[in-house]
Length: 177
Ligand SMILES: Cc1cc2nc3c(=O)[nH]c(=O)nc-3n(C[C@H](O)[C@H](O)[C@H](O)COP(=O)(O)OP(=O)(O)OC[C@H]3O[C@@H](n4cnc5c(N)ncnc54)[C@H](O)[C@@H]3O)c2cc1C
Image (tube, rainbow, N blue to C red; front, side, top):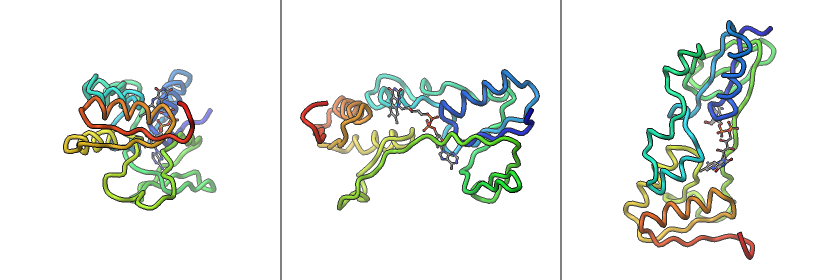
C-alpha cells in the first residue's frame, strides 16, 4: 500500500479523500495541499454568509485540531508543477512534496466571459470565502449591483446582495431560470 499520499485541493473532494484514506490506512503519511487562504469551509454556506444568515466561523467544518487528530498534515501553498518521473509535487516558493500516490482535487472556478470591461475593479466572481468577503465589502458602499448567470450560485448571490438593501439586477440568457 502507498505510504506517502499527497492530495492537492482542500475542498470536499480532497477532505473526504484524506479522511477515507486515513480510515483505511492508519499509518499512511497523508498531506493535503491547501491553496486557499483559509481552512476547510463550506462553499454552499457562502450564500448564507452573504445574506447575513450565518457568521463566518460557522462555515468551517474542520479545525486545525481535527486535522491534527486525524494525523492529516495540511500544507498551505499552491501546486505549480507535478514531476511524475520522480514522484514530486512542487509548490509556489519551491517547497517540494514527494508522493507515492497523488490526488488532484482541484475543483472548478467561475469562468469569466470574454467581454469588454470584464477585468475592471468591482467585477467579481464567487468561488471562495475571500471572494464573498470582497463582495460584502463592495456591497457596503453600493446602491446598485448586477449579477450575471443562470446557475444556482448567481441566484444565491443576487439574493444575498439584495438582502443587504442593494438594488440588484439579475441577468440571464434564457426566458426562465
Ligand atoms: C457560492 C457557492 C455555492 C454553492 N452551493 C452549492 C449547493 O448549494 N449545493 C451543491 O451541491 N454545491 C454547491 N456549490 C458547489 C460546491 O461547492 C462544489 O461542487 C464543491 O465545492 C466541489 O468540491 P471539490 O472538492 O471538488 O472542489 P472545490 O471545493 O472547488 O475545492 C478545490 C480546492 O482546490 C484548491 N486548489 C485549486 N488549485 C490548486 C492548486 N494548484 N494548488 C493547491 N490548491 C488548489 C482550491 O483553492 C480549492 O479550495 C456551491 C459553490 C459555490 C462557490
